[in-house]
Length: 432
Image 1 (spheres, rainbow, N blue to C red):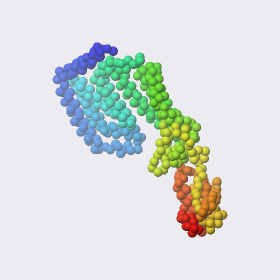
Image 2 (image 1 turned 60 degrees about the vertical axis):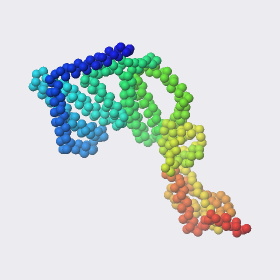
Image 3 (image 1 turned 180 degrees about the vertical axis):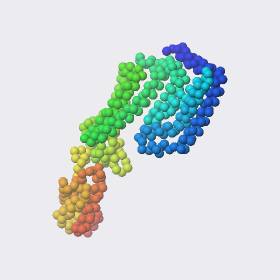
Image 4 (image 1 turned 90 degrees about the vertical axis):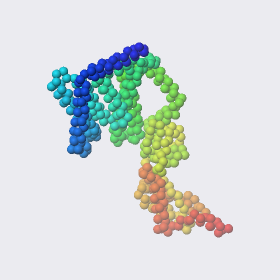
């Protein structure tokens, strides 16, 4: 539309406002209506204060569902507005009944605006996201106010009068506002639906953790895509017009976002082949052993139980060597190396070491622990005891520490001597 059409739309809007104001301002009913509105506001505030002191609806509704409690809280917060609607409506009805040709247009507008305010507040209370709540409230209130004042059609025409044509797509301020508002609402609804379905998927115990995460991501992507397509179709945008932009985005992904796409695809591959899943005990490259906590679209979080979490890109799990301690089985073999003096019987030492490992509750009885002689040192015989635990995620270092303490106690009880660190140096100096 050309500038002349825009000027005509704005002129029509201004003329409508002037005629409405002229009709009301030139009448003796103007101060009467404002006086009635003021009286209704004073009475409403007094009634609301009395009701709030006498009734505690918040305590009375503590056992109700969350959405009903939100509605009640909104009603309590708008007691004054509700009372104003009732009082102003009664005054308007009385004037129209008792006075011939009474002018109550402004009172009616005030009642309608107050009603729209309460209704919008109640509906918006069901939306917990603060940003979406505010956008919905402002948008709905603006549309309701313009409609009540009879200015909605003219405002729509003014917003739709100026346009920019991009590849066959007519972009107007009205289209931008509608698309933005609908997109925010649709994405909020899609996120809520996706979270609900994800909770259902995670509740199915027959599915493995990796399949649960994979299904959750696919559901989220599918619902978000459907929401965006639905919004674009609702506002009248031809999706074929976006083919050019889609090609440009594809080129950008191929050059500038290839790492992000690579990590995303790698994450899907990991979830599909179940090589890595939440709860696994792994080590990647030079990273120390950790537990997989979450698997995101770009990275996997590995908790090392020392207050740090490694956010490892998903691509590293595909391209680097990964040690998965619990890939096919939750059982993990650990070892503890120790030394005993030459004066202690090696066979007795081996038996004592096995008994010490079995005394630890976390050590499995089957496979049974074993102890081997690995070297004859300069001052002591070197041993290693192997044992298995079932739940590495519960702690491998702590279990190894418990086994070492059990070895100490058992050797003390059995009279097995553990050489001191400086024993080898003392013997060598004595020989010299």
